[in-house]
Length: 108
Image (cartoon, rainbow, N blue to C red):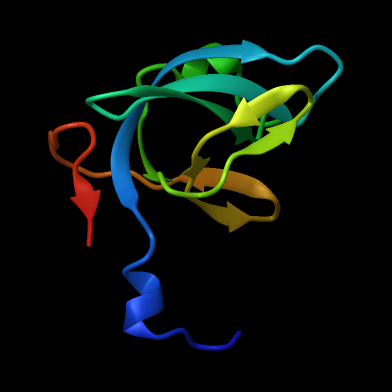
């Protein structure tokens, strides 16, 4: 993988968020619809890994998101952020923080 400049990295708006709602998407087995709380706003997101996690088990999970990714529509749902995860054999392990960090806090 090629390297990027620090200036390119600073273009990413990485933030702490909380998954507050989830629901299955009819006909989809690998993705679910979610709503995240960024502290000052709530956004719809598509969450992968539905074959590994029950949608209700994700509610309350604190995650790290790319908040300024352009919106993308999948399965009729517009996703307005991307949750970051480690990928082990296609299973996502959501990136998080260990302490109480205010929702919306930037990651630098």
